[in-house]
Image (tube, rainbow over all chains, first blue to last red; front, side, top):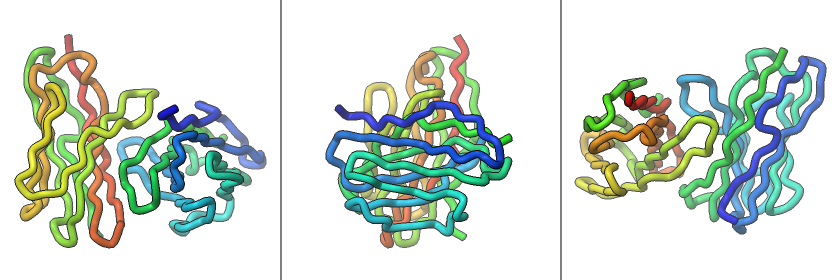
Length: 113
Length: 111
């Protein structure tokens, strides 16, 4: 298995909802990443997990809460989001945090209404 | 602020024509330059990783060159085909392990 799988592909949520994005890989990669991308902008790094521990938090608001329950799974819990949080959320993995050969998922298109 | 700039932002090319576009990056503390190809509704797919000044990499009809002294990389596509339509992203890895992404060049091949 050489893929990163993200679910759901599309999500519409209200500002008072709680939802979660999921990311899964079975390549034995020990680093996993959440990126946020808005149209015509570069991907913005949000979080990095290395060996299931949070390694980097790029000053992301607390309404985004990452979780890495095991080496294959990465979640992003969403609560009280704002319309400006609408974006494509990409998950990626790599062999380790210092290996930048990323494998990406196809993303979750999030719309906050 | 250290940015990676890609130009043009979008590009329409006739099928069969060759094309190229640019990634400009900070030349200081350079470590590597990554190119990704991203088709709509799919995952970004790694194309090339380049590290040495003067490097040239090739994959089928796609090739890339690297100038680390002046901070740019060109991506070339020879004889464009409809399946080449995608967004091409570059990312610069700096020596402090900071990976900086460009916003991409969206390539549309017209049949």
